[in-house]
Image (cartoon, rainbow, N blue to C red; front, side):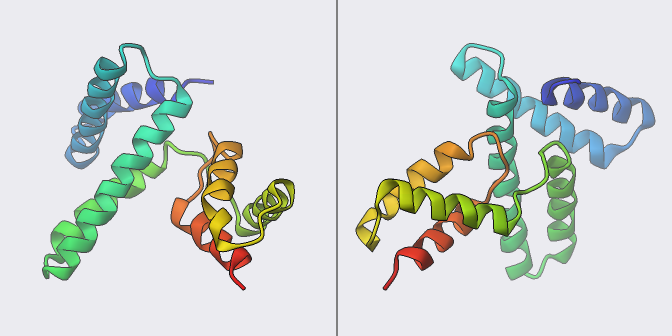
Amino acid sequence: MPTIRERLLSELTAALKAKDTTRLETLRMAKAALQKQEIEVQHQLDDTEMMALLSTLIKQRREAAESYTKGGRADLAAKEQAEIELLESYLPPPMDAAALEAVVTAVIAETGASSAKDIGLVMKTVLGKLAGQRVDGKAVNALVRAKLSP
């Protein structure tokens, strides 16, 4: 099975040959971010690091789309949304809410967390256990807060 990096590079070549400019621009941007990150860390990124990088790029696109929407630029917001969908295709499917809740409940029991003071410990443990899986940090935080609030 090809790595995320290999898939990205092969689909970049395919988009170039097909003259698919939207896809090509997005993949070039992702490749540039990949190369920049590899230079910073001085090694080739593995799939887990690639997922973190893609998640960061997706988050940036979401923030930009939100800004464009607030500014009345629906055309640019739609472009950002298309980029988000393309980048998300390289990530595994998101974890479902029931499985996430089960992990959070197990970690709360495991750590003995009982109040809002323990949110940091629970968050760190949950995100550590879910490394390599696609989860929304805000959703995890909201769930942990709901479980630990009186």
